[in-house]
Image 1 (cartoon, rainbow, N blue to C red):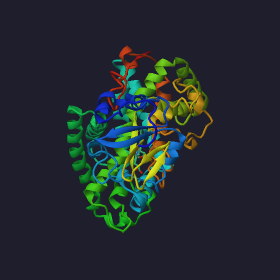
Image 2 (image 1 turned 90 degrees about the vertical axis):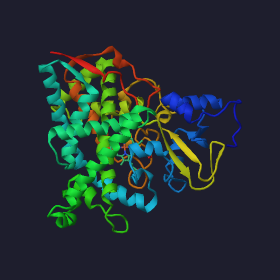
Image 3 (image 1 turned 180 degrees about the vertical axis):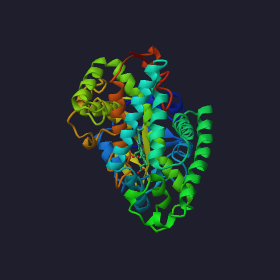
Image 4 (image 1 turned 135 degrees about the horizontal axis):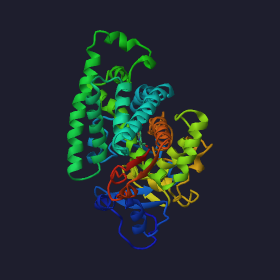
Length: 434
Ligand code: HEM
């Protein structure tokens, strides 16, 4: 990098990332000598990379003529988390075709609404069951079961309720372990192999059904998500091999279950801002439904902004580039700092204050530097196709939790920032008051 170093320090590297977790990005800027830097050199897998943040950084990073994704994500993250051949690492026409033909077709507002209704009823039942029994509810674990069962049925996979809940827990385990370089990572890899085999069977089942040829001719809107994955053809008209179709099917269901991590943080936010519980409850009473309230949605956005989930994302330069006075070589990694962009004191008003009202009446999707699920556009770029699912599931979760009076375990206020991904200790666990 050619920018003048503000003061002589070393750049942060992969071992620092493994040690510091979510603190890595701030540490990297401090090591570079300027905590407010827009860009700071780091080393990833021994190679030079540039960590960038802010609105200009988002525009730069999401310009697909400048950056490609192939080979950008280190294998030890990609293998357990996304799977072989996943859309995340595709570029250009292959990416666009799969994104639109499968992911955007699987996540249309009609489909999301149907899922949200089942999740709404699932939370209502789980909370009432808890009231009738132990009066305790572990938000993280309950969210896995509620989202998982609703979603796997919605997706059209077959199995008993018990089988689907067990499957959902394994998918959640993949997300929980992929970034922890010890037993959790090995467990995530074992779950990955097991889930790959199970979802491949689901694809094979659809493709060997007697009505399969007709199924392929149906309007995509009439197909289940499993059928859609099984029937998806690449840009050359070829069916995906069953393994890749299974990987992409999981790339819809696994991150949907992972909303359980934000659900846990949403409970923490409500516990720390009890006035919000009353306000959301009043909104629900006024609207007569726990679905779709503007305040509950604003809480969902603020949870996504403030609490740590995705720390940063990598891409590789297609050609020599410059950013913030730094030279970037062809093939070099550039990392967009997701957390640092969402919480940047240079661009956000009081970023460290949890204030959902900043999102009320605002089109959050149009805020360029609000990137909890990536930036740029969904159809041509790599922005997450699951933002509608995430915000709606979270909003209904917030509204359901706010229907009850409860206290939270004191450990639940803490979440280890050195662990990626993190969540409140012990769930958190809520004790419901009758
Ligand atoms: C991509 C975050 C939920 C499916 C992404 C990206 C992020 C992200 C940061 C990368 C954007 C980029 O590469 O520039 C999250 C978070 C979620 C979530 C924090 C909350 C749990 C979902 C859901 C789905 C989903 C519910 C279900 C459809 C995907 C897929 C991609 C993606 C398929 C790859 C898109 C592409 O490369 O074109 N997500 N996501 N995610 N997400 Fe999500």
